[in-house]
Length: 258
Image 1 (cartoon, rainbow, N blue to C red):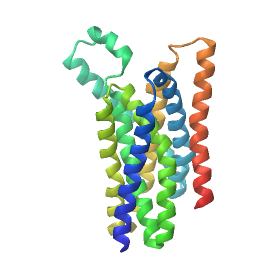
Image 2: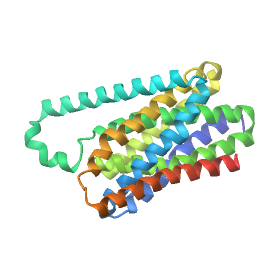
Image 3: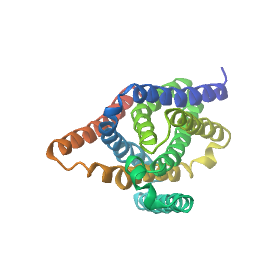
Image 4: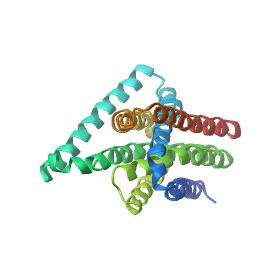
C-alpha cells in the first residue's frame, strides 16, 4: 500500500476504534456508577493533560513559557466560550426556573468544551500518525497503536462527560465519532504539508491541554464537593488517582512498545 493509504487507514481506524471501545465501556456501565465514573474521568483528563499532551507540546515547541502562555489563553478562551453558552441558555429560558434541571446536568457546557479540545487533540494525533508513516511504515503502525492505547481511557472520560452534560447516548456517540474525524483531517494535511504543520502542532496540543484542565477543574470538580462526607471523598480521591494511573500506565506501555 502507498504511504497515503496507510495514513488514511490508520487515522480512521485509530479514531473510530478508540471512540467505539470507550462507548462500549461507558454504555455498559450502570446508571449508579456514573457519579463515580465522573471522578475517574477527572483523573483521566488531568492525567492526559499533564502527563501526555502538555509535555509533548513543550517538547515540540521547545519553549515552556510560550506553551504555557497558550494554555493560559486557552483556559481564558474556554471560560468565555462557556459564558456564551450560559448567556444563550439564559436568553432562551428563565435560569431560575431551570435550577432543578441544572442540578442534573450543565446544559451541555462541559460537553461542548471537551468536544472542542478533543477535536484539537485528535487533529494532532493525525499529524503524528502521518509523520511516522512518512518516515517508516512499521513506525507508523506502532505509533497508531500507541495512540489508540492512550486515547481509549481519555475517550471513556469524554463520553461520560457528554452524558453528564445532558447529551443522549446516541448523540454522545455521534459527536465523539465526528470529533474523531479530525484525526483523518490532521493526517491528510500533515501528509501534504508536514513542514508547515510543525509550527502549528504545539499550539493545538496546548489548546487541547487547556480544554482538559478547564473542564476537569472548572466544570467537574465543583460537582464532587456536593458530597462532602468522608466516605464519598475517599472514593473520589481514589477514582481520580485511578484515572491518572490509567493514563500513566498506557503512556508507559506505549513507550515500551514504540
